[in-house]
Length: 170
Image (tube, rainbow, N blue to C red; front, side):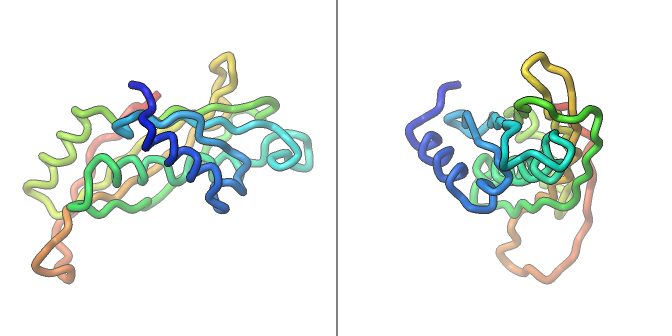
């Protein structure tokens, strides 16, 4: 799907937002329906660590807000979405520009909505790979996203949490 004029503006906003800009990464594509976002993280003076490879904090920071933002946009105002947990596994030093692609399918969105019909909240786990131009994986970030439907009557009750199986995202 092509970028819309609206998602092009959002992409520019992401890239100018100080917290994201500080990671050294850039959003390079946002689908018109927010179902896919791609980022790139170049090796340069802003992202280089002491030993000359991409700083691990830049790798993590580059992928941190993306899934939460996608779910917020795709689910709409009737849902609460938070980053709940994350971990990163370094596979290889980043010695060149790295890329990551984030996707949420309509089927996944429907699955989330169905799961929340009977439960108060759920956790959704995604693996995001940071790869170089040839597709070699340099790091894998596991993101746990907390989602619940807004409770119009009371925000005080705790309710049940259901965890869905890990989603394979490439």
